[in-house]
Image 1 (cartoon, one colour):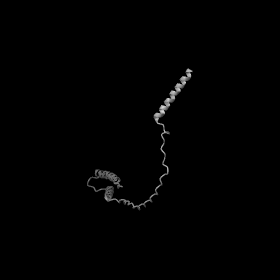
Image 2: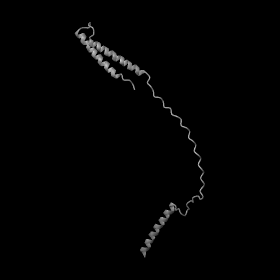
Image 3: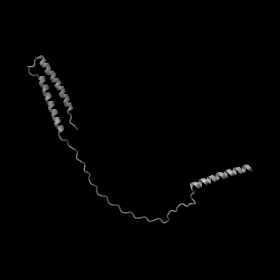
Image 4: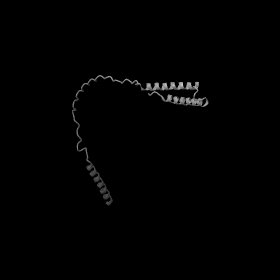
Length: 130
């Protein structure tokens, strides 16, 4: 994480503004040839200390950061091979295929249905005639 210098920059700016105001008021009231007042001296000292602290933080930020140690995975022991399975015996009777008698094709189903419909029509006609 970077080291913050922004808070110091703002404090330096505010101190500089107060120092400038103090210097302007002294020059306006007493003249430029008078020495700096105690208030100015205190502000100059505070500003100098803030600048030194900022420089120290910036120098510390440029130093290399400690890095996390890389995780080295330990090698797992190799797995033991599994024992081969015993072969199964073949089945005695293979499955019998469906005989053609059990299975009726689609076309045969439709033909049978159509015959049944015709037979029903004929039966109805014959009963009506008699």
